[in-house]
Each structure stands twice: as structure tokens, then as C-alpha cells.
Image 1 (cartoon, helix red, strand yellow):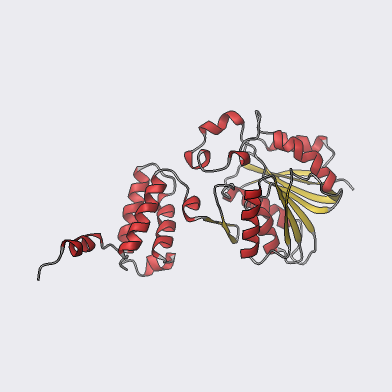
Image 2 (cartoon, rainbow, N blue to C red; image 1 turned 45 degrees about the vertical axis):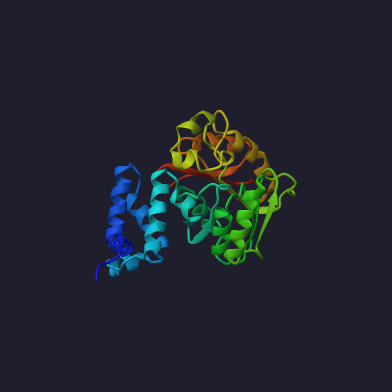
Length: 296
């Protein structure tokens, strides 16, 4: 019996998890993509509905033609410099999984430093109120609330589309009863001295530098969440007085900065009268966070 052309094509496309993963790694590496092994694995896990352990423990499992087609399409998009998070529509951050869309900044590991510093200021059983200004996907706010069950929080943003993403993430994580969202500029309309904690990851890229960013950022992150003005500090000039206004006495603020901006941002907060100021480095040993307290 002679196999049909369709059968021959199907046999030619048969491939295993390990073979597919290694071939994709090579393609991504040759194209200059950062972390090709991780990107290829994440896309393969989603395309073939497998886990990392499946790839390691059952490497010769065959993929179906549909899985191969899906994976090939995603690899093509990654080769076109579309981020993995945009392709899959989700991103792991801290200890949670977030939905992401083109309307929100894709959360970066650097921003986890904000979460770490914020959590260190409040023990697990403490009840406190926080506001995350420029909430985006909800990464910071929801990571803190997930770790502190007695806390409640508000996320503000001027983008209604971003707020919709954050609301969906709160609902998916079972945090909708402790997280509220408001469309406003930073803290406009919020009462004075209403919060124990203020967090923010504001835009801090200098306007002229945006054109030089990697395509994954320049072409896929909203410029509204990137552009910090001519010197990258415009957002902080607005945040500092608003933070002073809405924080309770002895309340804590934690903000992310660009790797070479921390001292300038710290100076802005010092000039406004904040105390206990310090700079915290990220996992790459780069200055990443400025934190301090409102005077009593």
C-alpha cells in the first residue's frame, strides 16, 4: 500500500518535544534573541500544552500537526521581536500570573524589587491601605495584596484600557474584593493622608532614548508607560508632592527608577521633606528603587 502525499507530509512534520525545543533555540539564538532557550521553552509549553517536567521527563513525546503549526507561528512572531508575553497574553511576575495586552507595560523582573521592599515594611498580618499610582496590569498592587491578606489597595491610571486589564487580573487572582481601581492622574481626587503605602513604577525613559530601545519594548510597550520627558524625571516631579499629600504620617513610599536615576529621584523626595530615604538595588546590582517615609 502506497502512502498518500498527505500522509507523507504528516510523517515529515512529526517531531518530538526535545527536537522541537532544540531547533527553536538555534533559530532564536541565530537571530540574536536574548534567552533563546527560555523563550523557546515557554512557547513550546503553551503550544503543546506541556510543562517543563514533561519536556525533561518525556522528551520524545510527539507533537500533533496542530501543535507544530501553532508553535511555528509563535516562533515566527518571536523572530519578528514580539515579546513572549505579548504572544501568549500572559506574564509571570513575583508569585502570580498576569494577563497582559498591548495596553499595559509588560512587567519586568526589575520591578519585583518594588514588591520586595514594600512587603518588608508590613508584616503578613498587618492591615494597611495602599495605592499604586500608574497601576498598569496591576503587577505591583496585586503582588502585594496576594502576600498580605489583611491589606486593601487602590490602583490609579489614566488609561481605561490598562485599568480593564488590572481589574481582570484582580478577579482572576481572587483579589477583586480587596482591590479597587480608579481612572485618574496619579493621585488626583484622592483624600489627604489616606494611605499607609504608596507604590509606583512611573515612566522614566528619556524621550529621545525611546527610539533606541529594543524592538520588544519600543514597538510593543505603550509609550505612555515609557516616556518620562526630556530628562526622564517628569513623572517623579508630579509624584513627589502627591505622595506627600496622600501618605499618612510615617507612611511608606516605594518607587522604581531607571538604573542611573535613583540619586536624582532620592533628591526630589529629600527636598520635599521625606525621611529615612534609601536606594535599593535590583538582582542585577543596579540602583532600582527609592523608598522612604513621610515625616510624623
